[in-house]
Amino acid sequence: MLDQRQHSNNATASLTAQFYESWWPGFSKEPDGEERMRMTFIVDALNDFAPDKNLEILDLGCGRGWLAPFLTKHGNVTGIDFAPAGIGYAQRNFSDHGTFFLADASLPFLGLPETKRFDVLVCSEVIEHVPDQLALLQQIAQLLRVNGLCILTTPNGNVWPQFEQTRSKETLQPLENWLPPNRLKHLLREAGFALLRHEGRATNERFGHFRAFQHRRVRYVFHHLKLEHWYGRLVLSNALYQVVAARKRR
Image (cartoon, rainbow, N blue to C red; front, side):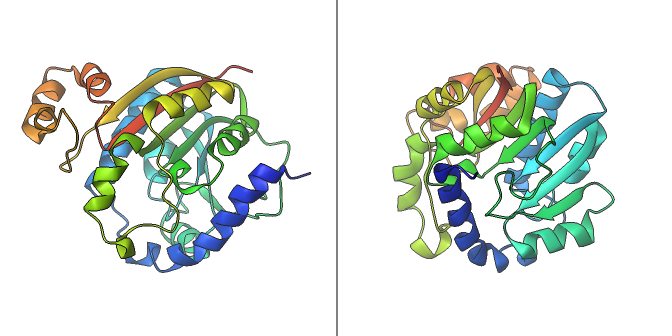
């Protein structure tokens, strides 16, 4: 039976899929700058915490499937999303790198085989667009094997008020429900995850007390010195993005 809270998330995703129908066809096969930032973290987390090259990987909310070419080097990739246009794009352009399914909101596992469990689940820029974020994390835990790895990227709720002021309502997505880092950390633990890495990722859009410290030249210096993880922890409270690697405990 579908949990009522998961049903709320799935129903919202089905309704907002209409927005993404016009969204994905306008994108390129190649990732843009911010997508590359997310991809770099995801690949680094796979290398650091799941080095096996024969993994079962789920890209939950895969959009147009752009991550698949980077994930497939680590195993078998399954992508799932609620937007038919995104899944169609993924099937046309990335079928050599993964298998893509249209999500079914009426089913507990979104239409995936109920006995299927994954070694790694990637959830990139999804959790900020659902009404019940704990339910989503619990659903992720259900889809993972014990000790499975969740890799998550999402905007930082601490900077949402400043970010919102820079955008017109027409440029925002239908549901913007950004989590502050401390709240995300709490929800992950409540859902049964142990945090392995939780960092900020600054972009050219800079906010908060560490605004000058987030300049791309400063970021480059820390990257060159191989201190990116230390820098990521330092800017977590005010960077535009937060990135997480977490292990399922139970």
